Amino acid sequence: MFDQAVAFAGATVEDLGTVTHVSRRDFDERATFRFRAQVPALEYLSLLIENAVLLRTHRGGRLYAGFELLSRMEPVVDRYMRISDVSERVYVFGEPDWKPPRHPNMRVIEINHVTRLAREWFVVADSPALRVALVGFDEEGFDARAVPEERTFSALKTHDPAVVRRLAAAAESLIDDSLGG
Image (cartoon, rainbow, N blue to C red):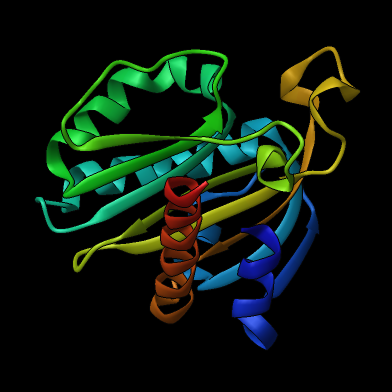
């Protein structure tokens, strides 16, 4: 997903370099930007997207979220259950080390730990009211650091509708592949 996001964004990407945090102003005012940061910055941007979904979506959209490991969803599972309440469909991707609760609008897509997707963090919201995506790649891998919050990601955030639609289509392709495999 990360490589596709970078390719889909093309020349429109503004590179912020390595950052310690990303502000709400960056999030709102920059259509598409790339950056390197540790987990807390990605958590903050993910929260902004998740909250926007809760405030703006009314059964009209889909959310695709990659957690690397499904257990990483556990601290935010209540938020994702609520997002599932207000969304047409929520797809959660991750290595099956934990079983999320069931919801009629949420589907879990299990991924294999050896795939590149198992090192990616993403939240893609595709609805008529909100099109925004955050996609990151874990540069070091799960076992590189004892403290998960210190892991570094290369990431891209966009609210360019064309890029978000293409990322949603790429996620749908991953879902189709999981059904066929």
